[in-house]
Image (cartoon, rainbow, N blue to C red; front, side):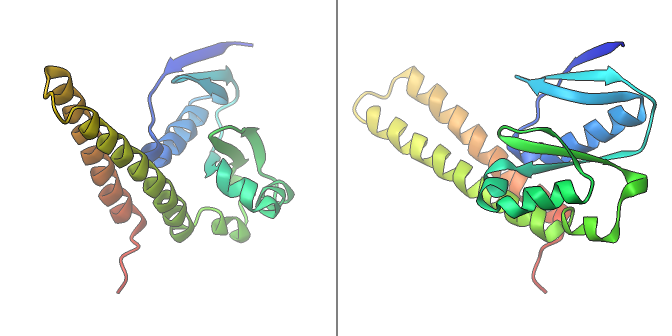
Length: 170
């Protein structure tokens, strides 16, 4: 069996892009096996239209019946960790499976993740600002620029996902 390894970075704001990447790789004949530190491991297989679904593991731990529902509906659990990754052939998708891929549910999960991530970054910024209060050194400005970049990336990701999931109230 032929194996393949590729390096890709996906942030928590890019889980939709990660699903698309895994789907495209399976269409090319590479079945996803695992990922560690940005390295994606694949096994060669027959090209097939397989849907990948990435769920927040914290959400699945909170609602244990959801994990069993995935399994009962034929979704294969590939990997657990920060995120749980499921796959299922597109030909086997049922109308009930659309519940797991609904834009409203995905938006709620992303909002939950964005809130915790934003709180962490802002907390770090406050600690950074208070530790450099008296002495504004060059390292302070470097850290401040990094935090500004991270927070602006979060804001950009928020609006990109909001547009994608079309959750504006009418």
